[in-house]
Image 1 (cartoon, rainbow, N blue to C red):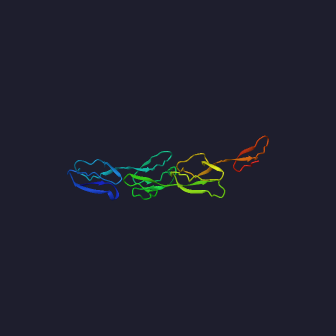
Image 2: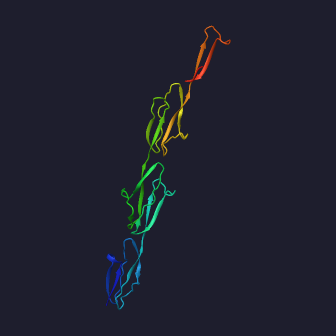
Image 3: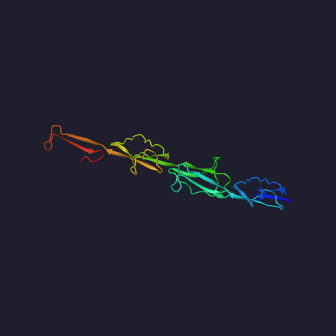
Amino acid sequence: TACEHSVGAGKQKYTRYFCEKRKILVDKAAGRGYTFNGWSPAVPETMPDRDVTVTAKWTINKYVVSFDLAGGKIDGKETYETEQDYNTKVAAPQNPVKTGYTFLGWLNAKGEEQIFPFTLEDENVALVANWKINTYKLTYKYDIEGKNDDVFDMHYGDEISHVSTPNKTGYEFRRWWATDDNQYATMPDHDVTFTAQWIVKQFTIKFDYSGGTLNGQSSLEITADYGSNVL
């Protein structure tokens, strides 16, 4: 009389035959994405006087999909991962955010773009966020008649080195003033406009009466702002 025991299912199933009363040697089964969890029913130690079928019991494995946010955040958190069963579909999480950057997608271990959803194989998966640094406008307004504004394309985080100190007839340059009154040292995550602030100069006109007098004075001095009316 023969006995048999079956391992797995489908293509993973195989059968062994043993003669009656011979010692039964049982291999530990191996299944991709599953952990072997014994035989059902238990394999007898020696061959009984009948055919026997035992079936492998399997526990599906879980694997971790980790998302390296590369400085970004999802829901305010700097790390994100999910654990799923083998051979299940992995969906993309919500897009992370990162100040001054645009999210382009996820890169796999080969540096290639990961397409979602994908089927989880029998291993952990590590994905990395792919970012593109943003460009913003840096504008300088001179407030000088006939002189156009200067506009520069700047990457987020670039150091801001102001243009040369301008000259304006009748005025002294004070400073570059941002519209939000923030003196940026590096480029923020938005456009910035600096406007020149000027201090008007004052000049003095002296009237010399050349020996004459007016109201008992031999001369008169008037100090006034550049461009203002003298009299």
